[in-house]
Length: 444
Ligand SMILES: Nc1ncnc2c1ncn2[C@@H]1O[C@H](COP(=O)(O)OP(=O)(O)OP(=O)(O)O)[C@@H](O)[C@H]1O
Ligand code: NI
Image (cartoon, rainbow, N blue to C red; front, side, top):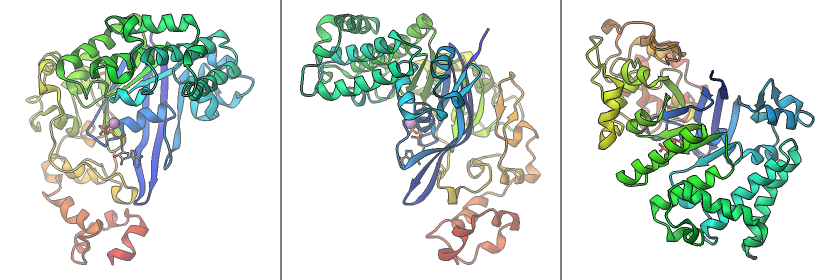
């Protein structure tokens, strides 16, 4: 029986920049089951990393989670925080956004771990890899020594931070137990690093990219996390090493039954690793479902575009078998996202409009797409959903938006091209959707 370990509801994360409010993630829903590998795929800038960082509580100013809830199922944690934070509890779930920062920080490493594209960022260059892994193990030991105490958890996080600072002036060896050092070596062995005893004494710069990636995975596993978030874990590596790292993640996942949220540009990686997938565009999941739903029965023209399917006006012509697609994507660049004509959308609030955000690049845009679509059931498995009117209605050429429809309109809504000639052709209901402050002033 499966159960949800993580439930993200209506999550919005904004960046308040000089240029305006950036809607990096908007009203995002996401449910991840214990033990599954859930993939998020999408073009650059679609909000994948911001989603991951929101779950990890790693959003820094000027960013802010402005809305939503993130629930994490962990009955032990529920018990541990029951006295101090009753408002953060919902049955077996803990509402992460209701927890104070120190408690959330204490969940890092032990409940949630994250691996990044760039392993250098996860290591301190002045400490050996072994020392840093031992440190991560030590944090976990302290937290699990008394899992029912929030104090133990938070102190272990502070301890870790404090000892990290101290370790810059004193040998950190003094602050970690022999057991933790032994475990660090075991972890290096677990992730396939040869001669782990010797390698433990080396510094990060002495590792190759692939080896450092493995070491980062070891570091992420040191706390035996429930959920591992892997953000483009292999993009920076060459193809052979990529495959090895994915094999490693696969093995570790099978062994530990860890839940993985895997973020990637590469559909081959999704096909090979994931159980379910969400396709992101402009801060939203625009299509989600099982691999078969998304690879084989996709509804959203954006998904089809990423897969490189020819826009399919007939019905079945562009359908592909997910398995053969997966096999095909494995060996070469076939898993790379196909470039889609047009520009990645601006996520600036005053430039986004209230339409389907993909409509300006969509080969099947219709007048209905001038309204922002909700998520519709999309005809595949029970989990299959698409934020596209095509989930509900057939494509109707008679209702198609003219070529260049958005070029004309949005140029006038933009800044330097603004001119008095275009607004006459705008449907009045569209014009009223523009926020008042952008249509005023400079455009008139
Ligand atoms: N520190 C920041 N300041 C301002 N805007 C930001 C910041 N970080 C992210 N954003 C905005 O959030 C959007 C989504 O970024 P995110 O990093 O989540 O994209 P992504 O899907 O992970 O892309 P990539 O595949 O390139 O990693 C960006 O396009 C950017 O506009
Ligand atoms: Ni990213």
